[in-house]
Amino acid sequence: MLELDQVTVPNDLEAHWIPFTPNRHFKKHPRLVARAEGMWYTATDGRPILDATAGMWCCNVGHRHPRVVAAIQRQAAELDYAPPFQFGHPKSFELASRLADLFPGDLDYAFFTNSGSESVDTALKIALAYQRAIGQGTRTRLIGRERGYHGVGFGGISVGGMVNNRKWFGTLLTGVDHLPHTLDLERNAFSRGQPKHGAELADELERLIQLHDASTIAAVIVEPVAGSIGVYPPPVGYLERLREITAKHGILLIFDEVITGFGRLGKANACEYFGIVPDLVTLAKGLTAATVPMGAVMVRKPIYEAIVERSPAPEKTIELFHGYTYSAHPIACAAALAVLETYKEERLFERAAALAPIFEERLHALAGKRHVIDIRNIGLMGAVELAPRPGRPTERAYDAMCDAFEHGLMIRVTGDTIALSPPLIATEADIARITDILGAVLDRLH
Image 1 (cartoon, rainbow, N blue to C red):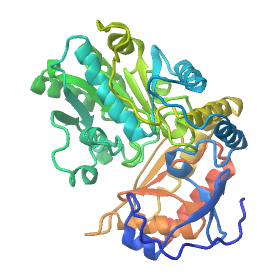
Image 2 (image 1 turned 30 degrees about the vertical axis):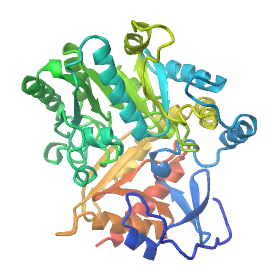
Image 3 (image 1 turned 90 degrees about the horizontal axis):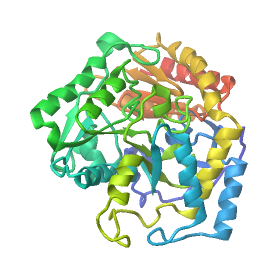
Image 4 (image 1 turned 90 degrees about the vertical axis):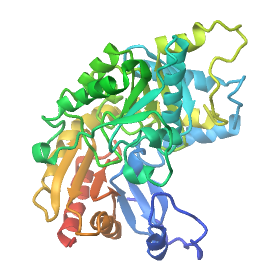
């Protein structure tokens, strides 16, 4: 458990506009952390705070891992930056090869970004470019899913389906439609792992195809497990059916694995966990275990070849006009390589798989607590959904988060759902402590 002397809190918190946060309340009652190590944060007043969320679904190897810290330090001293357009550096190619080996099928190419939001917008653009490259330029429509979260770029919030992320920003991208979400509390409440009911919801894609015609649809994007909305595992057979329908109609299937990638389900990725090879996969978070911002898009070989190898233009012509100043940043690549090595040497994916049943049992033991209307889990992802207070939605879960922090636990809330995603280094004792503190929080909650 990390200890720290009390840290001086800044006198003025006003200038920082904090994202996805009720700023007025936070600045009156700030929750500030000053250090982190392993499973623990340390608050500015010196209190240890157990991290039940891996930061924000991302600190999979725990905090301040010595191997990763050393790799970042070495790289900063060796090569701090290399321009990603027209030039390169060795570690980006090494990392791309390592990722290609980690993903199934012919997901053989990595396009590097700096975040999940950038990965989503990149994947959508690659999908559109591919359809045009193969002579299917009428395929410009994108299909997302209700309650889906795909970051905060204009592409991501257009295909996303969380209402508060969308309603403030006008019409967004045109030519976008949405599948229904898969949460069904009447039939699937308190399911363990994948719910049994709901695979037929994938057939709604056939209805959208009948409405728009397949010749207008470029891609479908879904989270294999919807995370940010509150952990919605896919119904048994649902993802398989989506893969079948998209393949039949020449529509690309994009898996948004920003959360599920790198061990969250006890496998290297959700593709492996569910036995499905999509056409593109978006990554971030666990790629560097959040030590340095980085994202990526894994691309199937035929898509890369259609855009790059089969271009009729001269060899010195740019094939895809897209990229970022910090794509494949050397320090991020060094961090990612160290994180991948840590996953392998410490067998963290296997560790997460072994811990998942224990996590499931401890989580579902909270089912009898007041206000709890559903509990969901898969891998090391869990959610406790609370009944909202009449006329004051989201307030009950927010109060639970504040109370948990005061009692030494960091949890995450979305709407009236408490989400848990502990680092992959967690022990059975850590899981017990997390659920014990959360149970006491729920007992105090009105």
